Length: 416
Image (tube, rainbow, N blue to C red; front, side):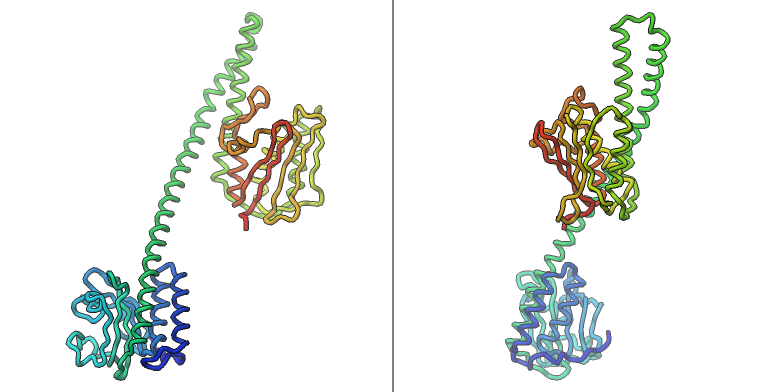
């Protein structure tokens, strides 16, 4: 370590000047925000020396039955990185006896291992334990000339040591919590990966038997239609409808699985143009329907992955299209709420609506608030929307009343 000059703002020996108290308060504030041992050491080694105008300071940690000199700030090297038995050094004495010790002359005190001090500049010292009840370390101050530390100096150092003890305990707690969060995150990531792999595998494995059922039922319908009675034909048609629905469900499961693994490509893009394209596609699918689209004009911009946001709009506008099937006239709107940051986009309609007490179920896979006979669907679309929005760091929610339409809102960035 390079030598450092004694602080010019330090108080005279034996006196507690306002600058020292201010420095202690600043250190307490800094220690309250230090979440790592390295950060604590950085604060302590400088503050300990500045509080008394000492020529050096050490920060010592208890390591089993040894003293570990973890850090220092001094005019010349002391013992940083060294370990000594608790019973063979003065920091160990302060920890074992749970009290501060002041030594005006290190060569006249039998507790001092003189050979360890002889290569150093030290003539006098003060050592205080970090945590009196059960010391976990010590803070030492050293002087190059004979010095008798006053009660005020020792009290300042002990106050610093007491605050340091709390800071170390907090840092340990932060480290434990951080480790638990990392472990929990890894567990969740592994569980999600397994679920996604399972969904992907099951979806693919379902393809073959579904194709077989659909193919043979179609062949039966074509080859034996003249020999089948009306009820048998009805059963056959029901089989084909079930296969069609299962295929749609498999497609949606595969899309949900792919979205979780999809790489994000964020950019600024015209989201209103995207909404217009989706609306045009819906009109093309059912040109006989009369639906009034109210899309916010003016090239409304958004920041996100355009391909993924298109899927969000396809699901939300597609839902609005579906649930306005019995509305006359049918109205669907898209835009951005004014004066709100981060940007909140909406899709609203005047369709069937839903009971708001069930809103929490909307975004769970396979959850439906209307019978499939009324409004067909797989129950995965809104779960896909939520996954995409969360992937962007945003959130999605809905408001509605039965028979009064529904409004869906989403953001593409975290709330401030």
